[in-house]
Length: 283
Image 1 (cartoon, rainbow, N blue to C red):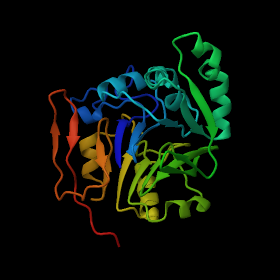
Image 2: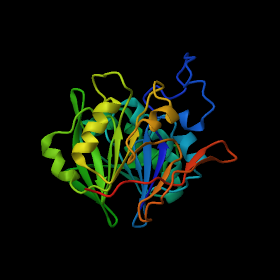
Image 3: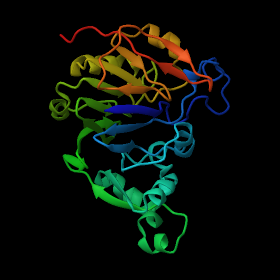
Image 4: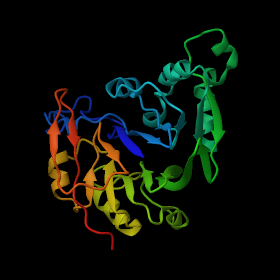
């Protein structure tokens, strides 16, 4: 299984409009953050988790030309309002894309993207996405991939995280109910939202995220949904060895053994690549 971070930023993105802070003006490519989303490739399936406003930009950057399904964590704009850009993928596959979400998110999708589930519009050749909507219960199966829905708290809302095999993705989170902890048992690689150091009503701080990571006890973890208040290099230097910051373009190959050293280099396009990092043995 492979996980690609299409975006790792908060709802404002980084750099943030109108901001002149050091992170927004940074030359470190890891501080350039589009809105948070991942791509999961497993068992021959390519799954998009959330459709950000930069989806077109993210897809072009990664030369993405195929999707098998879409998973939506919740229907806030920074996780949903790029959904129109999946039109290219539904046309390339010449059939509708299945989309999985909870009932609350599906209500908003039906209201705001009604044209995307209209077979007449698609049959007329209009440039629209074509979706089939599925309410996800405890789990869903996409091909041979089982996706487990993990309810988490996002301020006053209960939204979804997802677990696929030994990987779990919990973005936009400020609490994990006790009833969800068994769904995260023996997770190998965990992605957890961590907005900034200062408290926030709907997101974990870095310290709160680290506390939850310690409770879940994965072998390794990554922080995502990061604001412009966290510089990549300075923040990562203060993290425990088995925890790292995600960044746009980071790819995790979950099948390979972890390498023994952390090597960050910049490609010709200006994007950083992570070759790996050491982690302690699981207790």
